[in-house]
Image (cartoon, rainbow, N blue to C red):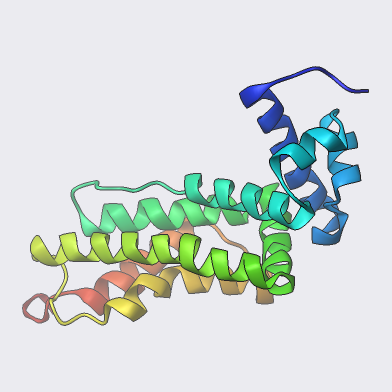
Length: 193
C-alpha cells in the first residue's frame, strides 16, 4: 500500500527499504520495484530522485557510511581509539553484521560504488584516523615516526577479518585488547618503553 509522504519521511522510508533488502537478500535484491513496494511508494518517485537502482544503492550506502562513526576527541589517544573501534564493532555485530557483509558484496560487484566507497568513505576514515594520530603525536602519546598508514588500519583490519573471514566474536573485550595490547604498545614513544 502506498502512503503519501514527502521529504525526510519519504527519504527515510526509501533508505530503510534499501538497507532491509540489502541485508536480507544481497545487492541484487535492491531493484526499483522491490524498493518501491517495501517503502510503500511508486517507481516514478524513485526515478525522480535516482536514475537507476545502482545510484539508489550507492547514495544510500554513502549516507550510512558518512554518518555511522564518531569523530572522537576524548583528550587521549586510548580514548579516541576505543571510541573509533567500538563504533566499528557495533556496526559489525548484531543486526547490522549481515548488512556490512552485503555492503562488501555490493562494493565488489559495482565499480562505481567501489570507487566512491574507496575515495569518499575510506578516504574520509583514513583522514580522520590520520588526524587522530596526529593529535596523539602532538600530545606526546605517540612517537612522531609511527607508520601512520599501518596504524590507522591495524585495529579495524582485525575487526574486518573477523566479520568477513573467521566469524570469530567481535566483543568489547577484543576492542580493549586491540587498543591496550597492540595499538598503544606499537605507537608508544620509545622513552616510555
